[in-house]
Length: 145
Image (cartoon, rainbow, N blue to C red; front, side, top):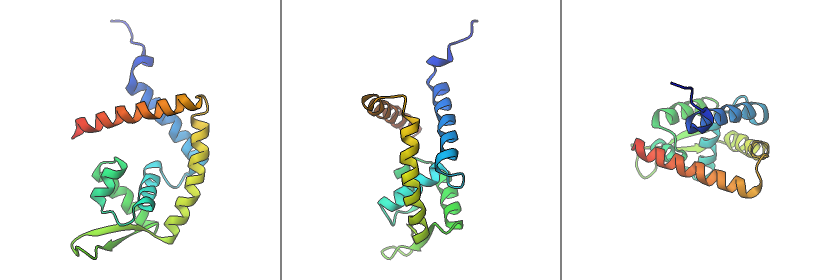
């Protein structure tokens, strides 16, 4: 059987894209805060007081990954777990002052990194790429259940 053209395999291209993103993230954004950690910081800046389950759904990360990310960010004192005033059995998450400071710094850096990352595309191509990738990712998440 002949070799296949991997440039026609979306999984192979997605892995290459992720590798490029990881390289740029480490060089331009942070070696200390990962992209999933930034997603959590960003979500809690947008909607303070989410519980971990809601946060997991909001940032499209599985529960075990979110649990690990939350533990690491709490260990760095970037977020805190607070007992929910309406339901004392539940903890909610909020950024600390340091978490908000780190988030602000990373927002600027991620914007710059995204410009570099998407530089080969014109504005219409960027919008199209993001729309199509989001659609494929959403469909894949629905398959997971």
